[in-house]
Length: 219
Image (cartoon, rainbow, N blue to C red; front, side, top):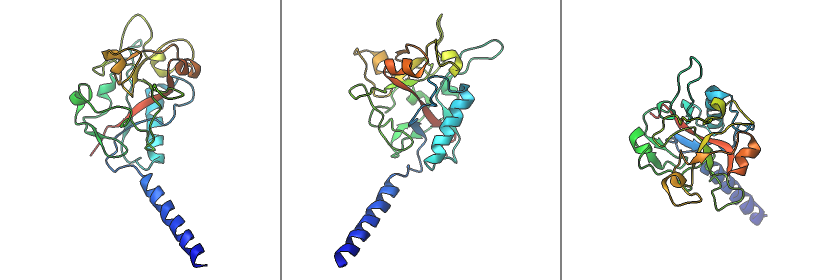
């Protein structure tokens, strides 16, 4: 009987420790979405992407902060372009574990600590990189290395995050690793265009429709 009580007590303690370990750091202000919206790069525009960030953060116990998707949009008719860097506050930003990612916008876009070990989801999980199956290192951004919107003669934001078919979006590599050893391959936010905007298209080039979320109010 004592052995049974001891086993039950130990199991209870382990479950309590596991639950405690699953809680994000109070400082968490950066994460990769644990899942996309489910419609490829059609995120419901910036509003839909922000809502997804907020919902995931709330489910993880960090919903009191104001979460914003790190996504840029191009000018469309009378609507001005939006730069990802202008949406996410001034920093500093920390991971699920409380590790510093960057102290400010300049550091974020110059020498940050985003990599496979630190670019965790809101649940504290690692995201598959290039060496894993399936590869999910393509993170939607629509941005240039400095965090401003990527422009050109082709679509760079999957119709400002409303397309789930034809089109393209600029993605970054959260694991900082690509097919070549050059700056784009190592870029967390501006590696290459996707092969399309559908969920299958994104998977084909190593993605899953996920994106970065930052807390705009970190204090």
